[in-house]
Image (cartoon, rainbow, N blue to C red; front, side, top):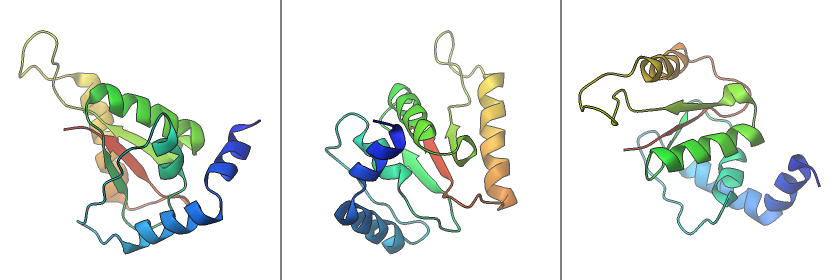
Length: 129
């Protein structure tokens, strides 16, 4: 079974309609919460989101969860459709020390959002508190 076949099965008629209702009901600045999704079910749901003018901002529980979710969504969508917005600081040695690699990723996300050049599929930004 391919990834596309699995996605089609998971986002069947009922789920696709529910995802569309959830996404179209969201106005900029509003929040929706998805709880109880096991494994990659959340990534499959997010990959099926319809296109809109504003990006979807997904906030995971922590850096590890965000990384796993980002990789899952990226595997299900076009690579240019999914971005990760990491913390700008290193946490392992000293607080307050900036991380150059994270700064580059953060700048890429902000540039993509400010350019308002969205791909034909929704732009998904994964981050964490």
